[in-house]
Image (cartoon, rainbow, N blue to C red; front, side):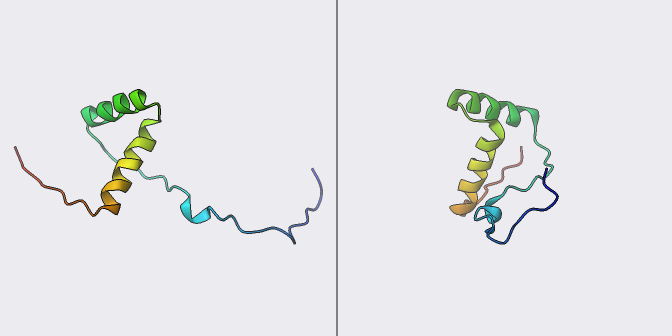
Length: 69
């Protein structure tokens, strides 16, 4: 490695605002199983699929209908 590097021509990362934030979330096993099976069928990682689903809900301002059973 060099002792010094020249960062005078460096640029900020244009994707820095789009980076993902790690969180801990508790989900039911059957919910995880559903998304894992769906993700395997679609060929994407299940965490990415959950993120896409939640993003779609947020962008469309989807309202949750709650029915307690």
